[in-house]
Image (cartoon, rainbow over all chains, first blue to last red; front, side):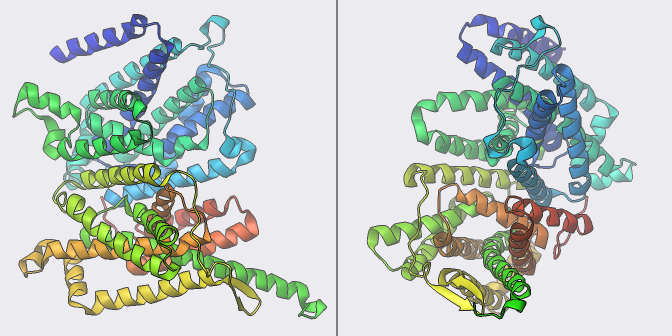
Length: 320
Length: 302
């Protein structure tokens, strides 16, 4: 009850947020927040619900970005169709890579996904005919839903577009987690042997979660590409890869609010630290280390500690 | 000129092939040195150390600064840098990995990722982002092996690599500390119960691993430019080698590293320079489809 009330309140606040300021700079940060929140939510399926760490997620973000843009610019498939194609292609890659990689677990899986991510990065970097290589693709046209007045050009419009995506995906995720499939995910995370003994096909569950996560990452990538209008293979590099993982962990894995807060912290903190110049990323890394060590359940666990004290601390805090 | 003309083309093909393989073996030896440390830390302590490549970077930069600021010979500078970074490895262990040893493996992995970001960006602040070149007297000198040409520096990379790996092999096989490390790898609790000082094992493992990474940086540094982000390149190559060879397996690191070096070199020479790396990765996928746990690895199945 209170949860439903809080979510509606949060949605309402977010919906009026861009109207509170006329600054296009703040609008820009809000768009980044929403797109990164979408990414973090999708990554959280793998990290939070399947319980596997992946370092390949930025690659799917990049695949979505490139697929959306290439189909839009070279084949004239624009608008929502480009977003759907981006998601589908990222999901297809996710299916193949997941099929190979999900056979192993733990640190090996994390490193394997890092390897797959590097393969995709390298190919993007060198397949100049299609991806235009390290220079990237520039002058990406804005996303259009067909008619003139439904063409997304301003940051505010992109905010609402990505905000809608975040709300829909968060709702789907919420429904999924409370469903039989979601409980199977969590059972797989908590005790794979027990889960398989009661008839859960662990490999299929993991593959399903992985593919869903990669589809959403693809859509987020396409949104990002059309918004910033320039993409380079660096989208799949180590920096984005670690950024997405940081958002999920710092916000709180295994929750829906956590990754959204994590994305806000990431975008906001990097902006706040901007005056520090070159020291910015050093301090950022130190804060990451501190938060991983002292708050393994993420910022959300802090909230739980304050309001619920003990007892109902939820599965994430227990696991951590 | 030296060869009779009719034999020329066939012989030349052979020379080119030989040259590619030799280059590949040298690059591969650098990968082996990086990957051995990575796989040692995982094998003994079950830690995936994302910051491993940063010790490679530090090894290269400290060598550079010892040479340019203090005017020390290259060989001595490389040796001092290796020892200093091995010491830093112990420091990283004491401040970082030892206190976290009982945490969830995600926490350790992520804090090592944080450490990697800290060291890379810290390196950029301290050393500057512009590439640097380590001067080595061996870079200019050429060794001729028949018709194949190699710089002395590259011979040094390979030679030192072989010596260090043989020494490491006998250290782990015969010394008391080596036996303690193997016991810890098999069963940490059991090892502690028999009176093995786990704390010391942790420290020595980090000392060896970070020393190997630094040595690789000091040796490979003069063959290319160095810059503070080189650590992420190193750790990526190291990880690729260990997934191919099997995480935690030293023979796997050796075979995987040399194999990756040769494959990249041949792929770059015969197919496409740009796709050399991608070809290396493609081979890995084939290996992993056949053996997901790597060539020498033991799988941890779901």
